[in-house]
Length: 481
Ligand code: GLU
Image 1 (tube, rainbow, N blue to C red):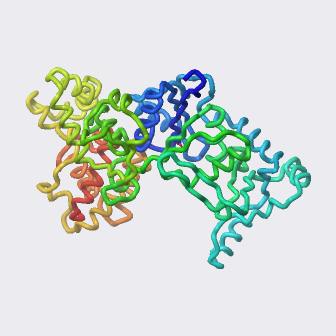
Image 2: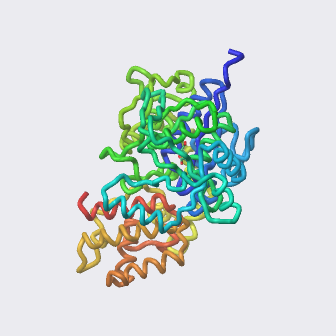
Image 3: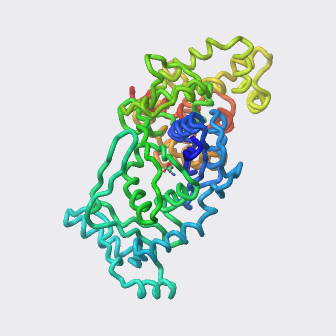
């Protein structure tokens, strides 16, 4: 065993939104494989998309992965021998590697302007050709290209993808996947601002961080031939490729927040136990054998093998998750359940957020719980609150406004009170609704009541995940779905 390479795997989320259940799912398989093999599990932040990446999102991802119980051995916050683990801090490294490929003749600077590319695209569209870069700048003599770069001309660096032949991706779960090189575009490796694209940064880092197995979701399969070409161009040894089946909505489409909550925080907020969420995510891609559905992380680590990965389209089914959670809750002792409830929302911090909102409204302590149920509940029942739809408005139209309100909430994840207030007022005005009408609809959707503590503050306490879910559920209720 001594000469066998240490297993090193990574999860490489892009911090561009909420901590996604898909990230937890992929992290789980990487983690379990690392632990099973006595290797290392690495967390790398792929934040090269400067317009969409935020530190807030990064922090939320780290927090959520810790909540669920997947600790990493190396990462941006804990460090490690191959850092930094945040790609935005490695920009100089990628530049060097991009230029190394240029010197080797495997990549080239491209000076095409946005206008030229737009014209090319339009012409290709019209001629019903495949869209893609036509490799024009590949034919510029290297010395001329170098001089133009030196003179400061705006450029990107592109990979010179062979025009002929095929690229083979050996996938552990799927066998050899073959891709025609002619259909692969000359990928941009380095953007004009000097930032790398996903392909270059991902491959350079996997190499430099000595990653032995790339375990990621199926949706990256189309990128992998480009990565294989990059490994070849650099002359580096490839990691093993393992593309896990994608999580799906009940209708079979790729899991998406349009159809159901995808944020790990949502599942935390509705009181799914972290170990149950892991168990559930494990079932999405793996079976323990037999019809055993409930197992612990340690049991999964002990039994793990890629041979038991199932390739069908796993459906992320909330009913099934709730069932598993119920089974786990029943096994807790009353005191353990109490501890879980405290860790969830029955704690001083959360109660101190709720109390100021109802302080003025309770005359007796026994009114506190009835006055505050919607801060603790998940989905609400709208059947007995006809005020969800204002008088003389119809259900469809109201559903549309609820959906528009949901988009406003999505765009303002911090639920900033002033911003939401203004946006909601604008929304009402745009549809010729009185603000009063819209706020009543929102109040009923979010609290299930016609009279409640201040709505916007309440949304903040309920949290954005459950707030979003209720807006979506209320709209669905009105559409009769
Ligand atoms: N940054 C990519 C993501 O967001 C990483 C994909 C990969 O694992 O290569 O999932």
